[in-house]
Image (cartoon, rainbow, N blue to C red):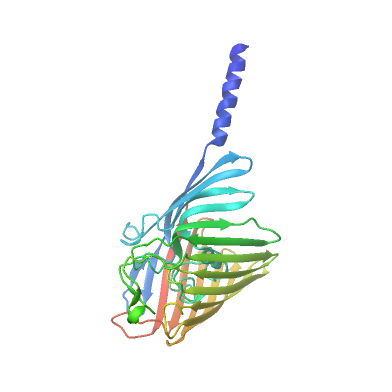
Amino acid sequence: MKKSLLALALLGAFAGVAQAQSAVVIYGNVDAGMIKRTDQSLAIGKRANNTLGFKGTEDLGNGLSAIFQLEIRYEPDTGTTESAVRPLFQGQSRVGLSGGFGTLRIGRGLTAFQESAVAFEPFHGIPSPAGFATDLAVGGYTSEPLAPAGNSINRFSNALWYNSPEFLGIQINTTIASKEALGNTVAIPGRGINGGPQYLINAPASANPYSISATWKNGPGALMLAAERNAIESQVKSVAGYVMVNPDTKLMFSITRQDQSHTKVTDQDTKSWLVGANYTMGAGKFLAGYGQKDADGAAKVKQASVGYEYSLSKRTYVYTDFSNKKGAPAIAPSTKTSINHLDLGINHSF
C-alpha cells in the first residue's frame, strides 16, 4: 500500500514537471527552382525564403507563457547562409512573454508594418521579383538602411515588439528600436553640414526607429493602417485592405507613400499602389497583381505579375510565375529597364 502511494506521488510529481517543460518545435521550408530573367542566364534559385527555425513556449502559470523563436535563412542550391553580411539568425531572433495582456518580445525580426502588410499582398509576402512585397507594397522603403548593404530591408535589430490582444477585431502592433549603430559600410549622403554625408560609416540612428500597424478584421474583410520611421528618419505610411468575395476568391489593395525629406533636398516623395487577387480552384491557386510606383525625379515603375501554385500535399506545392516590370533599374551590364521574370519550382515545408 505504501509503495503504491509512493508510486502515485512520484507519478504526479513527474507529470507536473513535464507540464511545465518547454515545448520546442523545429520547422522550416525548402524552396528551389529554375529562374530566367531578362539578360541573365537560366539559374537555379528560389522563389521564397528558405528557413530553418526553432520556436518554443513554456507555461509559467496564471495564463503567462515564455516564448522564443530563432530562424536561420539559407540558400538551397549551395547550402550556405543567405549572405556574408547577414546574421546567422537573419529571419528572426526574439524572446518574450505572452499572456492576457498580449505579446511582448525583444530581439530582431520583421517590423510591425512589414509583418502586417503580408496579408494584403497577392504573392503572400515572398521576396521573389514576381511579388510586390519588397518594392511596390512598401513604396521602395527600407526599414534598416544603416545596416551593411544587403543585410535587410524589412527588419529592425535591437528592438522591442508589442502585439495587443484582438478586441472587436482590432489589433495594435508596435515595434521600437534603439539608436545603436549597425555597421553600415557606406556613408549615406543627405542634408548634412556643407553638403556632406549626414550618416557616416557605422553611424547610429538619429532618432529611435519605430513601426506601428492597426489591423481590423470583420467577417470576410480586413483593413490595415500603418506608419514607420527608420534610422535615417525616412517615413512610410500605408493603408491596405482585402475582402474574401467567396471562400475561393480574395481581392486586395494597398496604397503607400514614402517621405525622405530628412535626407533629400529634392525628389523626396514616393507614391505606390497595387491591386491583387487570389483564386483557389481545387488543389490549385492563381495569383495576380498589378501596381505602380512613382518616385519624384525617376521613371514610373509599372509591374504586372501572375502566378500559379498546385498543392501536391498539405506541405508541398509546385509553382510557376511570370512578371514584367517596366521602369525598373537595369540589370548591369544591360541598359534595359523592362525586365521579365519567369520561374518554375517546388516548395516543401516541415
